[in-house]
Image (cartoon, rainbow, N blue to C red):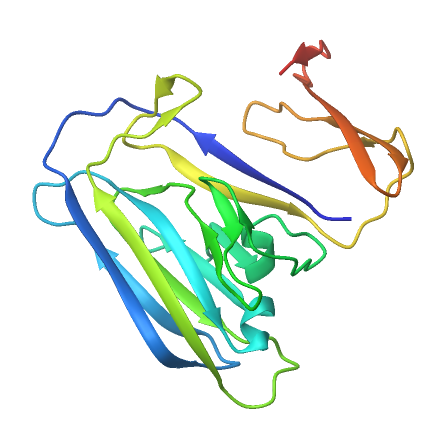
Amino acid sequence: MHVWVLLFVCILTTQAQELLTFGTGLSSQRLYKTETEIFSHTLSPGSTFGVLTHFWTTGDPEIDTSTFSYYIDGEAVPSIQFITYMLAGAGFNDRAAPWGTKWIGKGAKSGGWYNNFRVPFQKSIRVTGKLPSTASGDKTIWIIVRGTENLPTSFQGFQLPSTARLTLHKIEGVTYDPLAWVRVVCTKNNYNGININKKHMYFMDGGMIGIPIHEMRRLIL
């Protein structure tokens, strides 16, 4: 069972500034089993924040199971790290294609994974990639990474502050019983909880609640 949650943490407010785009597109490049930097960007003078807006990749079959990492603002451990197919929510490496939404998708029978979730940063962002340990030698990769400085981001009707952070939370390799309570995310305010109700092999239904541990009162999200 795989459960991944993206959590925004908001701190301050944002202000209007000049929009500046950045990014890269690499064609027929090589990816290795050792972690390799694909792209890095530092904010321009006068900019206070930026957002990664687009990630797309394709290539040899091993690219589908490669690992990519986003290092935010010089951090030593990446806030966001994912296997390619999980980037588009294909939790069991389902390669049926093409399909897509405005946020995620797979645009080709082979490869073509993309994600348009915005990843905010306040100083810099660094993107790396590496092949799975089972790969034989280096492999060919095509990849596009794009973003914009000072681009406001709205979520569910309200604008996120310029200091918002996107953090990836993972649960991997764990099996739960039907109706079991699963701690998906535990924030600084100790809100957590999700109820997974698996009805059969083809459908999963879940309910999510937040629980302030110090009060033990349930808040429906």
